[in-house]
Image 1 (cartoon, helix red, strand yellow):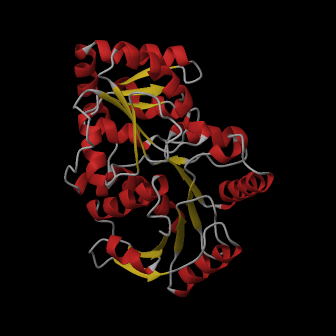
Image 2 (cartoon, helix red, strand yellow):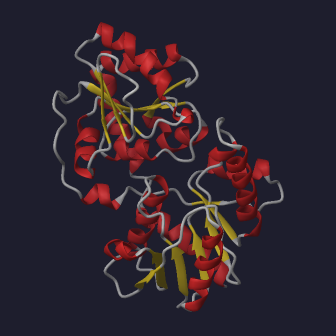
Image 3 (cartoon, one colour):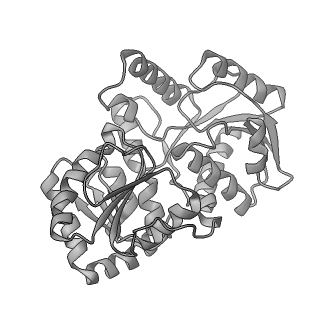
Length: 348
């Protein structure tokens, strides 16, 4: 039995945090034989599985700092770890073998980043890909992108991601006033440029003019700049309210120009909700045949897709069935098994 240190300081984040929470729960589900040092702040102890194999090791260190490069590795070594897993591309300095999860290469692609931020991301991503014993990724699309960019790199291992245990465990929560079931499109995410929310809003305007009862709900960020008729922007919501929004949406729309996985797509499908997605490789991979696709750079293409969903209840019913079937392919146990296999290869 090996002792594996997992850097869980980002467990409260949306994307990386979901991957970490899914992994920890999945390790319990597969009954892994190892002992796990869960590195993170004091409040993290509430998220550590109640299993004797999991030990919370308090660790406070700012993200994207020189300090984290030093103290994370030292803490793992001090507590007798045989391997360190970094679920983010910032790999600490350590004598231990490291397995790293790289969720995407978006920082190398999106415009608007400062020279400092872009340089930092380029250096740290290259270091993570070329120095880690194994690199894990959520989709085959990200694996292929890494190999294209760094041809000398070992092919990453695709782990996928299970449904967020926090979202699964929570009960349906408070409904947002004014929303009627199956009368709104739902977008979940932030308002960064690569999320492409501006084009989604532009595509929705003619839909709302033709179907005034149909709304667009934007959740997960500050969307107050969109004050168009028919747009609802409650900002951040509780897990219970998010679950209710997913369950009652006409469809979930993911218009991103770049993604590494697309968690809202998986979450929507898990609740049996139709998904309309940008035709980019990661989203096509996650949604499979369950997604209705559009060109994310074409407002007209997005509008046409939304119109299909508004006008055809048969289409929505068929897509809902396909969504549940596709989501069943992504499990926490499956994710944890692939991660555990990678650890085993390194430890052996």
